[in-house]
Image (tube, rainbow, N blue to C red):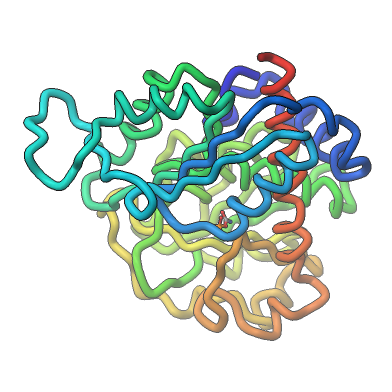
Length: 314
Ligand code: CP
């Protein structure tokens, strides 16, 4: 693999899931593969799971890591071309990315959307600038529009737990107090569309995802109907794509034990972090049906499978 920005960079997504499973069974199977090489993890936004799981994955492969929190630990970066840089941005992305490429063999980038201008966010300017200027393979640690490491993790978790070949997987919008990116929902739909699973996406009117990601999924605006006979319930908030960045006020979309009772004893999934009793009730997230901790644990092996594949291509 030459880069990991979306499912389109993966020739066989289910083979990569199998590779992640193999990493979980034997985490140190390739513990020398990264010897002498360095992974740079560049965070423009906060992270717990992505940061720690990717460092752990790198350790399992013998890779050194350099973690940089830009804006806090380094200079503010300018990403627009032909700008007179007389403001607060001291360095251009063209130099910064190229310099990081001098120190690192692979670069992971986390960059969230501004959620103010859809075209700007969906152009993925920052991620693209790294790809064009760093001269190294780039791994998305969540970009403005996608979170592929999370989606690979999610497929690994479903494969571990599924009781039938084609489980019914429901991705449901859930309430939140502030606008959140569409990245997790977009990516989850994009990856599940590569599987044999039945995918249903439930959201209130006006909270459709970009059709490009929805693909062949069934879309419903009746959450209770969507949850009927579900084998997996994946809850996630996303702000409106059409009324870009609008947050929505639908508290009844919280996942409660009453909602879970409609399902086929479904497993409850969420990428975390999650706001309890806003997105999901305490009793659901603490129930035996909740697999959020297993899911977060699997982030290590998804990252390891991706890094391993890239290292083999260097
Ligand atoms: N799910 C996820 O990406 O978690 P972090 O934002 O903590 O990395």
